[in-house]
Length: 189
Image (tube, rainbow, N blue to C red; front, side, top):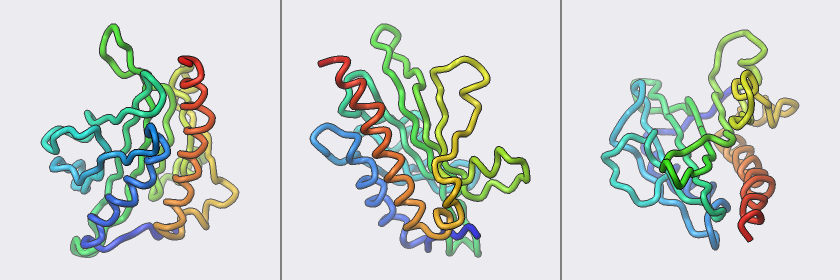
């Protein structure tokens, strides 16, 4: 049973958890700036990571530098109001990793770790989407649309609390740190 909820007065504390969650992706383990965005999405409150940009831009345009040259990240969580808006539930947690094209100044998606815990469709792909799952963006169609679950055998436990989903996301971020960013960093060294 999915139970990833917080009281609305805990949202500011969640910003600190997100900052800590993303720290391994930064050079010298420096914290990633995070905020509650002024822009809501589908009535959801948004926590977004950024590189010190003003809070008045849309969360979908916020990026942060990683320790690997020319690799940036984007992370946001969407918190949907429930229970007369006293409680919020995690609607989405998305980490996107981009290669920064120096010539065009565009962000090209490399991989993504997404989580849609309350996905309610009965299709098998929705089961894969509920927990943290991987998207391989730099691949031929249809691979970028595939959902590779990272916690399928432990999904009930992962989705049972905010602490468990945070731990699962932390483990997924560790994999991105070790298996993606360090390899790109080594290409530049």
